[in-house]
Image (tube, rainbow, N blue to C red; front, side):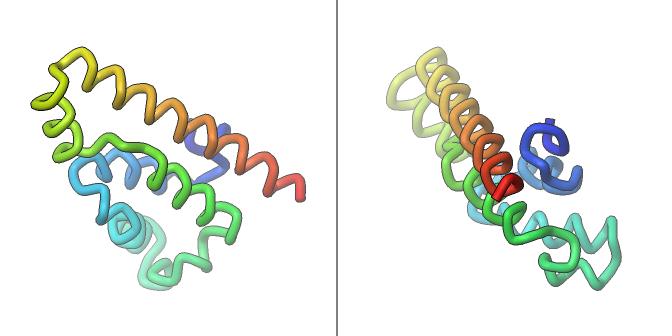
Length: 108
């Protein structure tokens, strides 16, 4: 899904999954995982991701609400079911928007 729908390298998908722990560290996680996979030259994101891919990644991370702290706050405020529904809805919107942005930018 990350490669086909979002047009991102697979390491970005792993970073998105781990971003659930600390959303504000999503970009740092991407750099760290990229360095592990591609070597020290990947510390410069532009060496393995295009500007369109970086924009898509940033959009998905920005729009998706779910992270542990946010989910805990939603659960405390609204309960389990609404928290799961809001998190799933937010993630669906983020992935949908990211896929559409990836297609628009690749066509441009």
